[in-house]
Image (tube, rainbow, N blue to C red; front, top):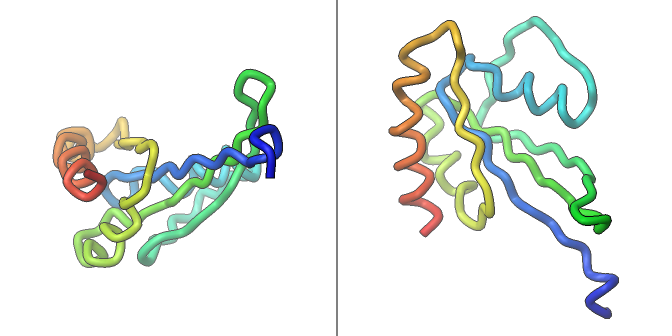
Length: 112
């Protein structure tokens, strides 16, 4: 396969406390839909979106991780190999904002 034909894929993990809107944000970005009902992510979920960067196609692989500690063992395994991370928090939940440093450390420790 020639370089011009190789697909570029970027693994992006989305992390943050539970119930901050990670799944809603990804659903809206990838599918253009939004639901008001809260449904806890069990482990991880995965969606893709094709974008263009400098006129070249890039596949964004968005990994929606559970924010609850009970799923730590599952979600940490999915951090490996990520080229990007989106740290999320809720604007109406101060604790979720204060936890951003914790999430950054957790992802950094698992991706090195």
